[in-house]
Length: 235
Length: 403
Ligand SMILES: Nc1ncnc2c1ncn2[C@@H]1O[C@H](COP(=O)(O)OP(=O)(O)OP(=O)(O)O)[C@@H](O)[C@H]1O
Ligand SMILES: [Mg+2]
Image 1 (spheres, rainbow over the protein chains, first blue to last red):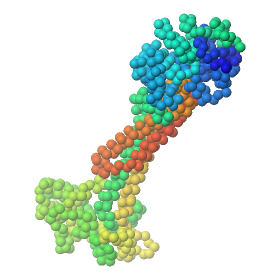
Image 2 (cartoon, each protein chain N blue to C red; image 1 turned 180 degrees about the horizontal axis):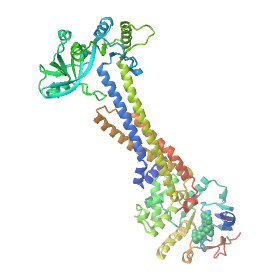
Image 3 (cartoon, chains in turn purple, red; image 1 turned 90 degrees about the horizontal axis):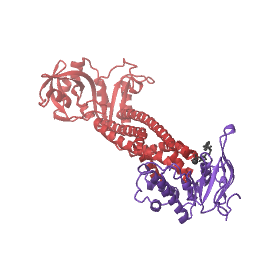
């Protein structure tokens, strides 16, 4: 069986001519099902760019991205939306929860687009909120929740649709270390219990330590990697 | 799916109630205006029609001059009618119930200290038949009184009220202008006509009395006739025209210098006027609906810009382009329909109040209510489509990055 995620010579260029920025410079990357990967690197090194491509939110300027063997570049806009809907869960750095919308309704959202009937949907959303330890907070709006709680709602929303991959861009970026550890424990549990593949951007070595593999970005390239599992690196 | 989308839209609308309310204000006003105008218009039309048929739908009037369709006045010098014309009509035209030569004037009516300016109608007792008046008290003119031109009068209810208050007017002597008249009868009230004039504000005196003592001539202004039931008024009209041409020596091929009009024509003219007015006001209201639609589009566009990140989030978690399109479209339509419903309620309420105030019937017109609702939904679709497409076409990553 092929790798779940495979990047081949993927480049992303922003801008044109003199002003062009090589945000990603022909990177190769393979991630297997069930891995827990931490992505690190200095600011502006291309981590978010890479995550967006992996999450099918953005398309590479050059190179091929295969998800489960499928060339994502050949898919239509709606097919990519379906791929996101069915296989990917996102936790954004800025949470991106809908304001003035209860935690439950926020978590429900991906299921609405799947056309799941309301009772089942509510049930699943409740379970997801319970899994992140937010039972009893269902009816609260994001504005009434703490940063850590909001981040947990965002995680619940990402996992409610039972994705194959959880992509988290600095999920602990604006949290204190105690809250950060809670979130990391949660993510680790999902990785271990559900076999969820996790790709997580972080600036903090403490957080990266939870992962079993670490990728370092430098100037749009992948630098030497630590703890690479079973020769998955550099094909 | 549509129901879900409706719920989503409803949720989005409820997130900003004040703005949603302001957004639909244009539609609310437009729809309310249309509903009020049209409802009042049809009430007024019904009122005019019923008023005029109360005058007697089998009534015809002959007057000297050009037809009222042609603006009149062209032959100011045309000979006035005489009593003999009325008698000729009575004798030579079949199927008539009553023929009343009528002349009107305006005089001061005085009784004791009370003083009231009113219309004096000189005619025969046939006038009461043609115009369908009934006596409340007293009696009508006798043949002798009419022939001799005696100073007797029958008063309309308003004149009685103004001059006598609660006193009994029968047998009293009043002055009309400089002449003393004895009151011999009082009419039942008819109330206001649809043109706002008080129909009860007049005093009826014998035609000869009017001619000799008020006007000082032998002219007759109008000849009113009423056809018997079942006699077509068109027939009476042509008969009268032929007879009057003959009597006035109008050569073949020459135009009439008088006109005979039928009540139906008058009804058509008047309801035509209210219809035109209704259509005009309706058009103005429709323009305000259009403005309301543009208001919705404007706010929806602002809303799309403002909710760019939200749209990005929705796209990122797997919403399809058409799901986002549908959501914003449904949102616009729900908003518009919501405005429509409020507008309909307001319009009906306003029409009801105004109808009561103007004393015309309130006629609920389900057709126009349905049309207003459908129209507001259409406004939502048309003006919501562009912003919705704008939202659906957003690039997820651009939208997420939007500040
Ligand atoms: N939309 C964009 N338009 C132009 N340049 C961009 C855009 N997004 C990113 N870049 C550039 O691409 C490079 C990589 O950006 P990226 O966001 O991937 O960095 P990052 O590693 O996530 O940094 P940080 O740790 O600060 O989040 C940067 O030089 C940035 O200026
Ligand atoms: Mg970043």
